[in-house]
Length: 528
Ligand code: G4P
Image 1 (cartoon, helix red, strand yellow):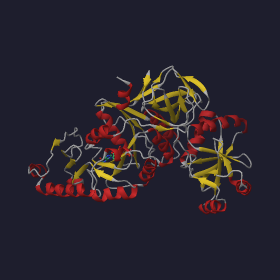
Image 2 (tube, protein in one colour):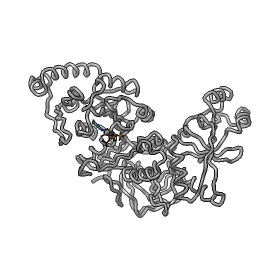
Image 3 (tube, rainbow, N blue to C red):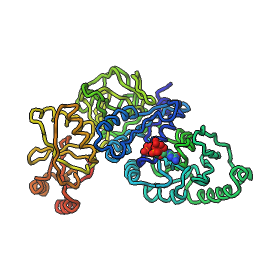
Image 4 (tube, helix red, strand yellow):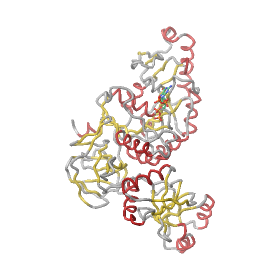
């Protein structure tokens, strides 16, 4: 197969949702279509169980599962589909943000009864900022939920999207009769049988046909006709370009658990979802069709065996062909590296591959060379953009609890931060280290892993910080910046990249500081 054909057939995407909306169930059903797994239940749920906050075995178990399900790949109708797993738990939201830098599109799952939830809002906002194409799947239609039009409204308003339904439900919950697929003009009838094998839609291009009344009953048929008429009037026609540029979002309805409406979603997805897209580097825009290899690390996973501290770095291939044993430039280290056993992912297995193409993810064994955001090329100096750090929500001093093991502590912290578990800030004034995280759970993960993988012990001490702001002196030579540094000395720190960060103790302080020093810009992400 030609290189261009390989690119064209790839679809690399993420499924995002608020926990419990049905992401795992949908993923599993998608895999069934690829024949990648034989039965339901094969994709382990990678949710952190409620109340498992201090259950370290649970955390370890999760790490095992999440390696296995980091990338799920399968072939469907000759398309190579790569699903990148995104943790639903909010404490790991930053992981999800980073994974979103490696997808070419996303599917958002929404629970028909709960509607748009908090975590969905945050994740969609990140997608919108980057104009990532989005398809919305409204799930659990076999249950009583919100009215379809109300939901579409809610999606538009809360998520700031411009929707166009490509399928439409006929009733819901107890009265759920099926789905009319606007996209391919077919009708699927719902049997309500949990073991239902995938129902093939019957072609039905004229809903005025009286046969519809026989199939779903006169009342439901008339209601569907009215609702479809309204939907066509209210919502714009599907526009491929608008979808791909992130300006229009098609919506599907279904029930993942019953594998209902999933095939229709997948069939449409492989047609409309983009193949690997060009990616911005600081230096230039890199097109996927370029012959030379480029790629970047978006995730690092520590090995499950604590005795061997090797890790798996997940590289998204942006352009060119990745070849086993070929020398590639590690741009940050300015060093050529060869990889003798790159892993590719297939369903829930990983295996060594000879070649990978744009859109694919390769897992590289790493003994500490990589950190998130690192770029690989054939020699060109490139830095891919878009793997920023966001301000953490929690901040604590980290103290060494075993003076004999300070080296181990430093190394452990260093490597865990490279993995992106949390962010480390070093105070300018006294060199004390502060760990910033998205959720409280990470502190326990860090403490546990430091002890079990590095033999180091740490304790924490609370620190009152509202937000970390990355400092950009727009005019570094003026007195204002010098004044800012002198007055705010106690609150200034360096992040791991050596960028200056202001640890503001309240929203008010942030506001006051910004108005007092207008030439010193404060940013909420490290990439501004
Ligand atoms: P998540 O990954 O987004 O967190 O959600 P997950 O797929 O684990 O689904 C959450 C719950 O919703 C699961 O039930 C799942 O069976 C159920 N579910 C998913 N899709 C549908 C659907 O179309 N209809 C209905 N009625 N339920 C659905 P659970 O009881 O929490 O877990 P389990 O014991 O079934 O695994």
